Length: 139
Image (cartoon, rainbow, N blue to C red; front, top):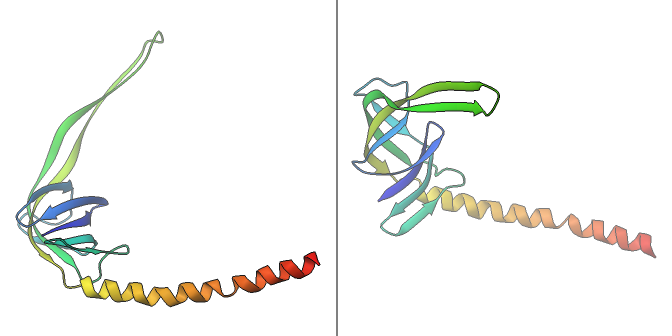
């Protein structure tokens, strides 16, 4: 079983007992975190897709540690101008481990899709009279 979940503005494919590095979270080390923005669930071939997220589904994780990533060197140069600029950056990261994936909301998302179908039919009805008005002006 795996899920695609949005954590701190980025999407990750996660499964149980997977360690993931994400952008720095405000939670303390050792605390538990719950992510509700689950975009896709795969339960042994049974795929549930959210629109945009699956209602009721969540991913539980535990914060292991806060750390900094590898240094990235940014070097800018303009040839023949004597311009050189060197800058470095280290991203602040949080390491989390996924403890469980809860898929309780898969059926609710399917019902929501059925509810939107009649609205699309109602929107198509007003378009027909507009076409008739165009025909009467041509005659």
